[in-house]
Length: 142
Image (cartoon, rainbow, N blue to C red):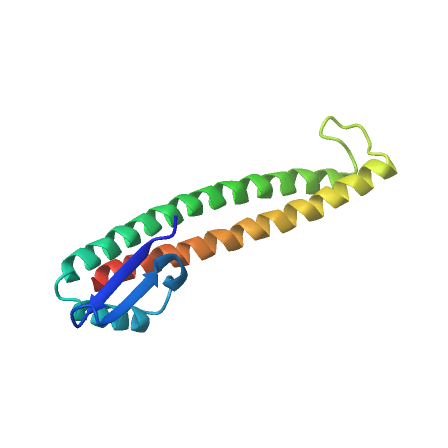
């Protein structure tokens, strides 16, 4: 669902529709400009600001949950990476049986995949953390 903010001023002569999912995240400067435009619609100003506040809180919650999930997945793939790296360096299964050449190649491929996936989840975690902080800052500006 795309959240929209409909702003009218000058008795309906001026109109603006803001698609919140497209507009945010943005800079604090852009938010301040938006708040100035909202203040032009003095009849609905409190309602519009309340809608913004609800949107920011929802987005903060979404990013917080996604951040936790990314951290969980990152740790899961780091563990898989560590287990596979142990197999590759010792060239043995965890039970002590030696790996064949084909199995060793397969484990090396898995190791590369686990490393890349763990790195990807770490980047996702950092991005969600950044956006969560950004939405917290937006709430403070309201």
